[in-house]
Image (tube, rainbow, N blue to C red; front, side):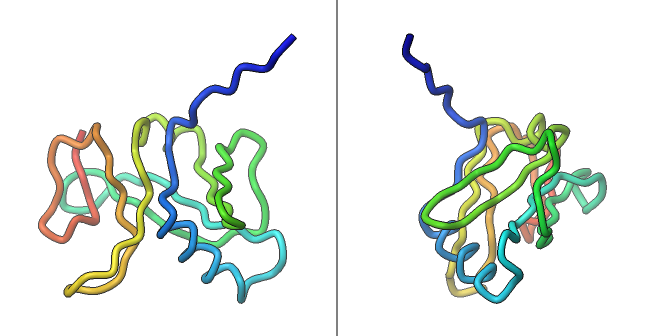
Length: 114
């Protein structure tokens, strides 16, 4: 019997994985970056990023190139099909979520509407 691997509902770009790994290198072993969708922001929802010590039982665990990102089940519903990226451009460095479900976002790109 062979295992069928299902694609992850959220992906992590190589640049995001490199940045997460760099950030976590100064944290306790086993730490991960938690990405969540919270109510608020100028468009209705906003992303939050926190460092946590361990995964919750229902978390989606994304691992790439030594980096670990966790997403809770409620946030996954808002982020299906998204890519977590890290950009470094003229206005600064930041994590950016490319979310195909977002119908609008604010000017600074930190909040979105569905």
